[in-house]
Length: 310
Image 1 (tube, one colour):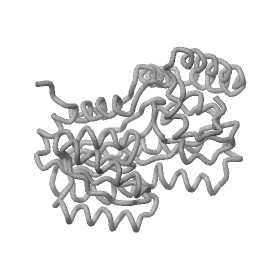
Image 2 (cartoon, rainbow, N blue to C red):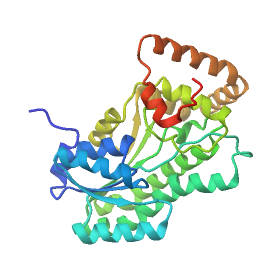
Image 3 (cartoon, one colour):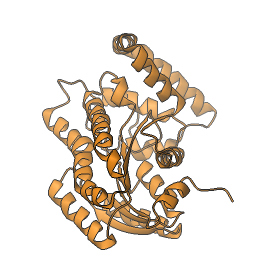
Image 4 (cartoon, rainbow, N blue to C red):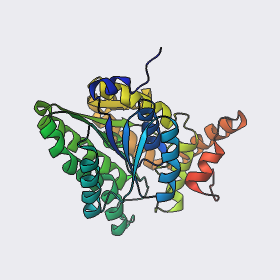
């Protein structure tokens, strides 16, 4: 019988206790569903109570136990109460996935200071809070795995994505620090850095329409699904891999940035100078995919709304 992606983690942690943020949709839900197939108890945290309830039903049907928590990860006092309730109710934690996040686009100077606070509160402070609140228990247990969901934006730094780039680069740096601090305490840390896949990360975007349009095209031409990403993440984290970079294009850019950083910087400058050309090429790719039936319009409708311009 073929093993599930979560089988190796289940063997390492027989009590099977996980806490996942952003668990009601996208990658978070896909991770929950993979763990549910192995019978895990899953603390599912999300800002949307309605989506949580629906997602929890699916987790139960797959064989898991859903412990749902409506939570804004940027609210540290609320997060503290949720973490305490989960740890008290389940006697510890084996897997923490800091997944909750939002995507957005805009120039550094006109994105808006309030928007900077909002995005960093979720993408960075949410990871800090979750880690700081659950790490003491993992240290005491001398066991556990933490998976931080960053992005290829942590090392690519594309123009018009300043706030998002900053948040994900910080998650990478934080993850490296945590790995060094926790390795000798039996706690493993992984950081995930994918390129674009069919996620709902842009559904709460606040940037200007002209900046969001590029994201619509990029996500609209992606064929990588949250389920595929979840399977690879759990498999590689269970094997002890720290940097989980996927798919192939992310690994290519990761190596390019590492060995030719100045060349990458020139590429970013050119992409900003010739944005219209890049966007036109993306639009042609979108149209080709649309003609062959490969564009998921239902997904675009859910994430970008009815006035999408692609």
